Length: 104
Image (cartoon, rainbow, N blue to C red; front, top):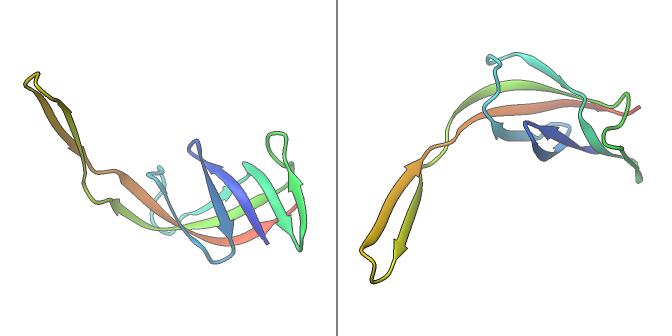
């Protein structure tokens, strides 16, 4: 059984026991989250698709920590124009452990 869940505008595949690396959430380590924005639900081969979400479907997850990703370097360059720009950033993330996937 798995579900497609929308978290902070992005879609993730949530299976029981899976570890999801999502954009930073305002939650402390050890908090339990109930995610009700389920877009698709697969139960034993039968697929339910929401419009946009499935009523009654809930994914339960626990926050296991967080941190910062590796640095991403963005380099812009235009040849023969003396134009160069170097910029980088590190994305903050939260780790979610999926505990349960319940259908409607």
